[in-house]
Image (tube, rainbow, N blue to C red):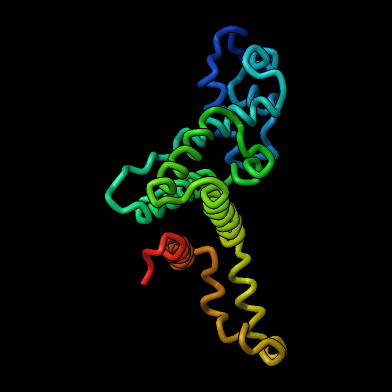
Length: 224
């Protein structure tokens, strides 16, 4: 009885790929962790050869930049209302939503903060909102940076929470020896298990926005 030889796997023609197809494949690969993203891995995902991808991206860094630029392009532009501080809150939530939907991208965005042109409108939207509130120059840049820092930090918390870090911490805090040594921390063991939650985010964002609004009101003499 002759042995059945499997049919060879057909690869795509070298010029049959498009950049969008490459980025689709790259996003599927990156979903398992940004460290898994290589040109060879994407080529395998697309049943192609690495050489077929080099027509569009010559290095892994170029591939990462193109993918992150695509992700940032999915952020929804906040619509202008009559209340600039509320619009700033919408901006912050929209940015956080993009990070939450693409958690694998967060570590790469720390090292590729401006991966392409889609990063520029994000800053423009924030500065426009702040300008409506009379916040410009260094104060606007600092406030914008603060919101980004909150969101990137919070996205990291979310990743850790999904990995069970919050649960582990809460379990440690109910240990009698730990509770005796750190009574105040142990008293918030239950809330600690929810760190990184949407409820906690809204609380911190509200405090941040209230501080921005209050400081601006004082600087313009509009405060009570």
